[in-house]
View 1 (spheres, one colour):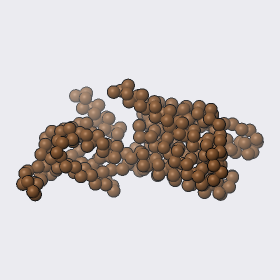
View 2: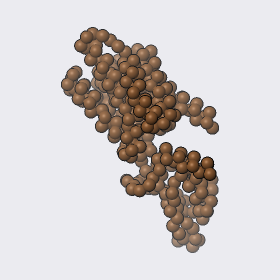
View 3: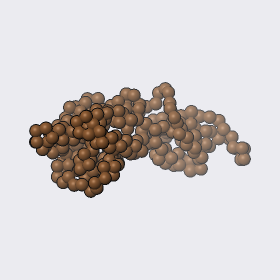
View 4: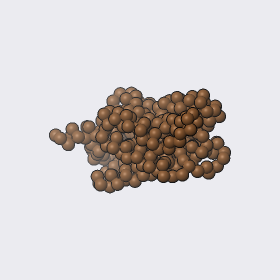
Amino acid sequence: MQYSNGLRRFIIVIFAGAALALGLNFFLLPGNIFGAGLNGIAQLVSAILKKTIGIKVDTGYFIFLLNVPVALLGFLKIGKSFTFYSILTVLSTTILTILLPVQRLTADPLMNALFGGVITGVGVGYSLKYGFSTGGMDIVAVFLNKTTGRSVGFLMLATNMIIILTAGFYFSWQSALYTIISNYALTRVVDSIHTSHQKITAFVVTAKAAAILPVIQHTLVRGVTVLPSKGAYSGKESQTLMTVLTRYELYRFKQLVSQEDPTAFINFVNTADIAGNFADSTQQEQIKAKVSDR
């Protein structure tokens, strides 16, 4: 299982690097549109050097250099595994960005902005979904997400204002406006893929609560409220289990309940907000480790 997870993550590393390199070299760079986070800053530095002193340095080199101090933050504050795979993704992006030629597929700046944002957003989103990042401001956003609970996409959009303003002042406001469109497309894609901040409430009506409860509590590490219930048609006594999950856990939750009680009725309700103790993925792993040590 551990080998399978590692292989899956490695495939996502290559996929994410390819997505970012394609988005940059085929859409953002030819359209003079700037990406999000440190990738966008790397574009700005490369473009400013070329415009002011005529020195052309590939964006990929700046992507790597700017990610070194941020990788240290990830190592210290987020975790070794997260940082390791994030560094691999940065290397993958750097190498592919240097190897792939910068090629204009369309002269339409709106198409460049939208497709550049969507393609890079797919790379960022799937990296975050599998427990690491594409480096740069993603690491900062994940750190802030763990401390504030806010949407990663929202935090990434907030950190990109400096890129937009610099693009507007130094190049053109048209470039800045298309950069806003590109970054918005990126954040929407990221939030549609990386859904750990999206909560749902599950109501499970079952006659086998005793079998389902320990599975939910120990496998998913989620608290459960048990409500007595009774079938209006059958008149049979049952229990209704209520718990709050992230969308990440939805598929696994349905599997676990179905294994213990295939006849259970489950109702999922979107949850606007929560207050109180709700363990994130890091806290869940810590709780599992404590239980296994006993």
